[in-house]
Image 1 (cartoon, rainbow, N blue to C red):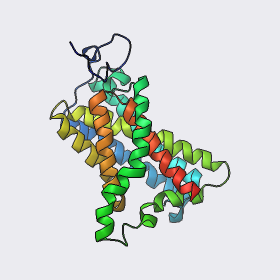
Image 2 (image 1 turned 90 degrees about the vertical axis):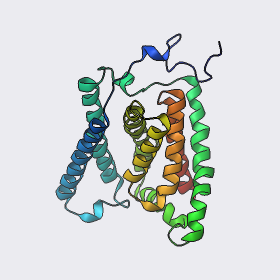
Image 3 (image 1 turned 45 degrees about the vertical axis):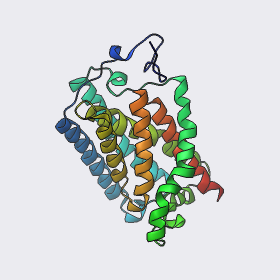
Image 4 (image 1 turned 90 degrees about the horizontal axis):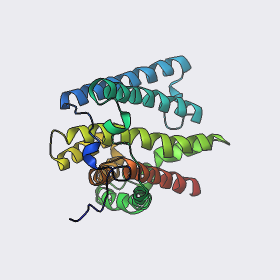
Length: 251
């Protein structure tokens, strides 16, 4: 019998059926995510009122503000996943959201780099031809450029940690581990992949980035679908964000 080239999700001799994850209805997935999103929004608004300046909420905000805003987003989402796992899942966080890594998942690093350097350019090119002003390189890179310009001294390290570690881990847990993983228990895997990619794209909120983010969301979803774990998609996401940050820093 031929073995899958991807191997078992984790552990020597441990096969996929041994890693039963929780099953979540579509309504439950939407409600849980929406609750976390609304709580994160309330925390962001409260922080804005506390700071007392609208100028501190954009991409050009000081890095310490960006860091607090990031944690305000992550904490409700991670708390939501913990609650979902304990109440509707198996109670094992790693099992419920396929949060496993194997050595071959490091293939995600070249996948992420290639996605940033090649894939984004390819899928954005038709839009740049139709709307050269809107889809210029300066506009596409504006968010990352503003974040780098606002980071001074050692704050660039904090920015790098947030962008290249925190964001990829939390986003992959939510969009691939929870949303795509939950959806594929109800629909075909390709449908779940598309739903997760679209959700991932829209939540970033910048239409100029949508083509590249959607294409990369497909790549991340495919990594998760084939490996049945988050390791490769997390590392691809880390490499994707790190490459974008490095490109902006060396410009």
